[in-house]
Image 1: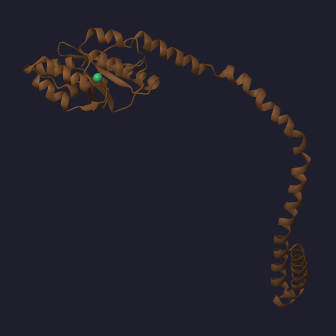
Image 2 (image 1 turned 45 degrees about the vertical axis):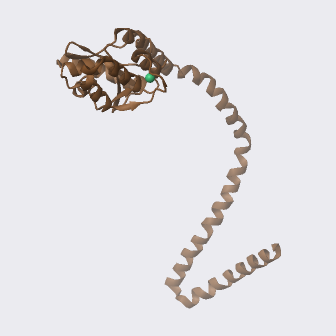
Image 3 (image 1 turned 30 degrees about the horizontal axis):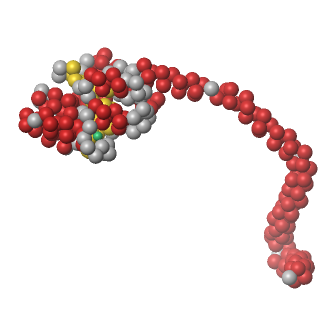
Length: 249
Ligand SMILES: [Zn+2]
């Protein structure tokens, strides 16, 4: 693959990644025509997918497309074998329908499962161009080609980007909501929490200071003196607390 094409494909896959959430391994839904053409040309289809899509791929096929291959006759045995080696995508068509219709129904109107469609059907390709975010791959002779983004894809990308730029207008509404509670909070908040906190701070700061004093006294005057000065205080406090708690109980 030429460097220029490789660069264009890389850019395009980046678009599908950013705007539509495509991720590796890419799910490539392969139709019967693609299987038939690539086996008759003896191409390495998977290798071509991964070089065009520039990532790992998971080829998939629907039952309707396999049935379509059976109908093509004995000459398609290699194509049938190839298709059968792929992961089967359930399409829930009890009686097989045309491969084109089956794939179109699986993709739906938004390609929410993020399939990359590999098809040799010209009508299906034009149908899928109406579904935004649907990469389409086909064989041009022996060369695998990733189609440029469809108008629907570009339009969807443009709308998504415009939405991404919208938030400034949404912010205009939000400040009204956030400002109202702020005003309410200001009044009661200022006096009460601060005064409560100050008391707590003093209480918590007290003991460590006393502890430090005790340590100093222990160091300066000896343990016996320090014990005498501190013990009565402790006892009183414990008693007070004890009587209070007893009273509460
Ligand atoms: Zn089907």
